[in-house]
Image (cartoon, rainbow over all chains, first blue to last red; front, side, top):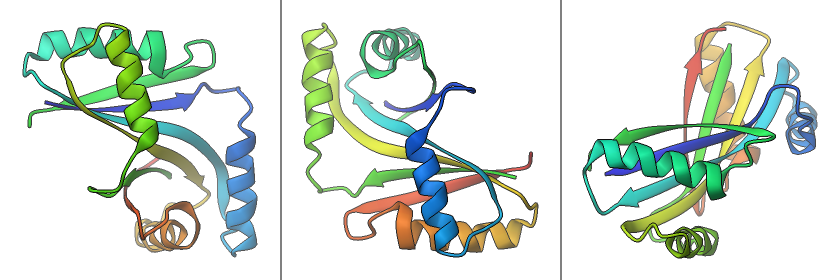
Length: 81
Length: 81
């Protein structure tokens, strides 16, 4: 079972990296951008196929290690192997 | 129009960051992990709603700046505001 975890800064949290990328894209000629935000993608391949267990464990992993719940939100998508 | 871009290392490209995260998760007690790979998430808010134009420009942005086509793959998802 494969989990794709998407971690993004919460609304309102400053994102200097995203701003830098926005400026870089604008300097390449892409002027019609309202906003650019950078986040993380974590892809985990699990050795088991129990969906309930996967949801519980991935939630724990996100809260304990992968995301910073103070400034980041996460969501994830499970897909069968 | 909002674009979510997912950038991940190609298969076969070493991912030391992913390996470090895997070890950290294992040390927290999550032993049933086959693999962990780290990637990037870029969320761009566009000032226009032309889907064709968005697809063309986002492909260009990915190739020119956001991803490294030698070692990374990207895919993206458009969603109306």
